[in-house]
Length: 149
Image (cartoon, rainbow, N blue to C red; front, side, top):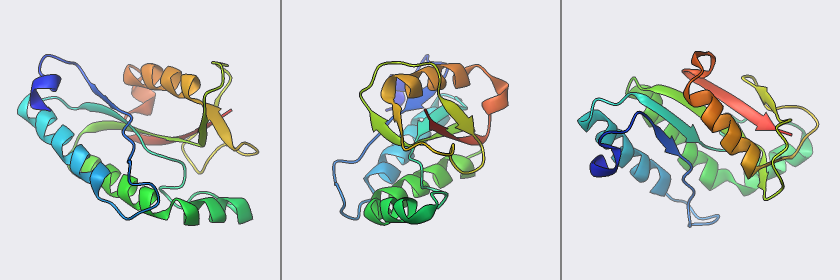
């Protein structure tokens, strides 16, 4: 990981786990390696894509059901996010609602508290747009942002 980070300005992490619904520390372990690589090269900036629900912010019956179904992945993402925060990095955590393969809209909504209301999804292309935007915008430093269309 350190070799891949050498000479870069920032890390963008869009990791997912292949463990499905099973308990796993896979995301935590990968994030630990990313952090070690960043520290080896004095890098501070990271944008980490987690998932809506890591802060128990999904409401209503469907939100609670979703957090129950994704419990293990949310725990793993949450622990990875805590590692990032505890290492004094300049982070932005993205918390997208359900990812789709839809076309880029450029009309997504952002919130630092909870998740955008009345939406269940966001195209991956819109999440990517936000990530690029957040990399250079100090308004997103050391923040966790919920995203949805």
